[in-house]
Length: 99
Image (cartoon, rainbow, N blue to C red; front, top):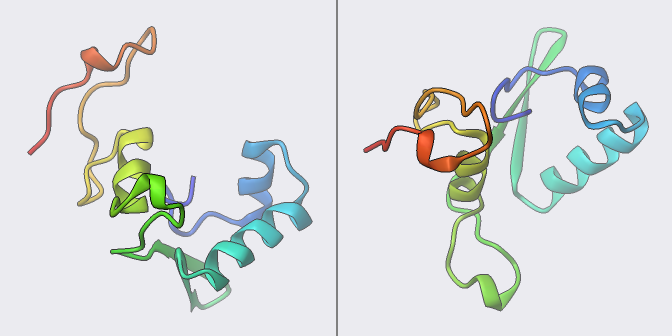
């Protein structure tokens, strides 16, 4: 949700994930402290961004960036645009290739 809407409110993030607002805040805080997210205050709102270049921690994932997985899962191109039309049955082959 943060990748799709960088200014999402924690209340909306929590509701969309089925978590309490406190739990969502704790997770976002952990991700920020670990360096996966950055948060910048824009007036009364927070603007979140996935930190480019952050890698998975486990050696089995090797040198793969977290952002690449998030873009794959959300269907957004790394520049923020959609990679294709939404799938009607979850089949990844319905998506248009990007690049």
